Every structure is written in structure tokens, then in C-alpha cells.
Image 1 (cartoon, rainbow, N blue to C red):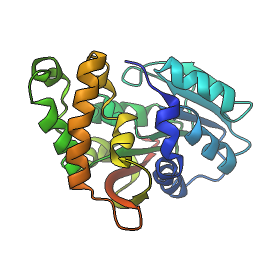
Image 2 (cartoon, rainbow, N blue to C red):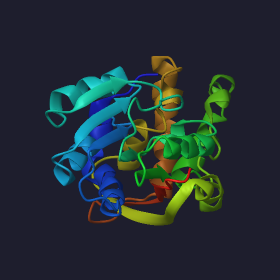
Image 3 (cartoon, rainbow, N blue to C red):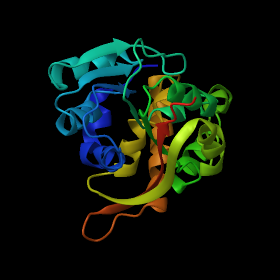
Length: 259
């Protein structure tokens, strides 16, 4: 399943905002080693480089397309690694594992987060952000259109009802290993412009696995049906702006030296 860095970065400011908010809550001054897990095209790695210019940075992603963009346009003097987040283990204990909008793609990720917390250097920080808007009109519309014929059978196995749990699950997984643990949620209200902006947003993320298995004809029809529903759910204002509420979950955990 490939990624399109260009489509993803159509909303760079909006996608960077939660990464910036997460980074602002990282309680470290001069970390020596940082891993950007799920670095994508390197936009979050650039934020890390600006905040911690003396740190050794490693961007990790499973997408060759994203890593190619990161190598071209990401911060210089960073290293890049193609690897799967579910099985990734740092070669050397880092001071910070930063992960922006990755783990919603990783099944059963709560124990993986707990394992990663244990790989940190003493006092190291695990900082994670995940979208938690899978009950929003945008994702309900995706599920509804995917359930329609003639593509229902092929798309049904790809539908993920709720891949991100509530804060209590991550508290239970991380608290026993953490010296400190901070969890919170934020709902952003993105003011988007252009024709069918919510459709363009989800084309860069949630729709990728679905569109990848449809032929060109069914893909066009699917997108047309979805565009109509999204336009009703998120009507464009008279000034041309479409408001897109988006809820996200944040986790900042400090590794306890006792674990």
C-alpha cells in the first residue's frame, strides 16, 4: 500500500499543528538521540530538528515513497530507516521517541507503545499523537459508501471501525512503566479551502487502502458518491471556507528507570 507524499502534504499546516502541540509538551532540554517513528515525508522530523538542533535524528517509516521525499526535503544530517513500527526496536536507547499520526495504522498498538517506552534511556520520553475521529461524519461516510455495491465485498475487510482507543486504555498500558504520564485530547477546527477539501484530506490518509484495491472506473464512482456525502456533512460556507472538526489523542510518557 503506497503513500502519496504530495497528497498528504496538501494540508501541511494542519497536519503540522498537532505535531507542534505534541512537541511543545516534551519535557526534555537537550536530548542526544531522537527517533521520529512514522516520520512520513520528514515534516515532523524538521520540527524536531528545529527544537533540538544538536540531537542525532533518525526518521523511521515503512513507506519508501515517504522516505524518498524525506531524504530529499527533510532536515540535513538526519538518518533515515525503512522499518515497520510494530516490530521496530531502537539499536541504542534513545532519549525521545516521537510519533505523530502513525499508530492508528498499527493493530493492537497499546502493548507496542508500552514496549517502546521500555526501550528508552532512563528519563527518556515517548511522545505520541493519534487521530481519534473515527466516529466523525467523515469516517462514517467512508464506511457507508464502502458498504454499498458493487465494491462492498472487496472493501469490507479494509474498514477499520475504531483503531484508536480511549485514553484509559493507554493509561493502563503505560502507567506501570512510566515515571510520569500525560494524556489529553484536542479537537481542532480546521478551516479548509478549495473544492471538496475534506475529500482531498481523507484521500491522503484514510482512503488510501480502499482506493488501492479499486479499478479506475469504480474508484471514480466511489469518490463521486463520497464527495456528495462529505459535502452534505461539511457544507462550504458563503465565504468559501469548509470547517472540518478533527479530534486527536496525545500521550507523553517518561520512562521510569526502575522498569
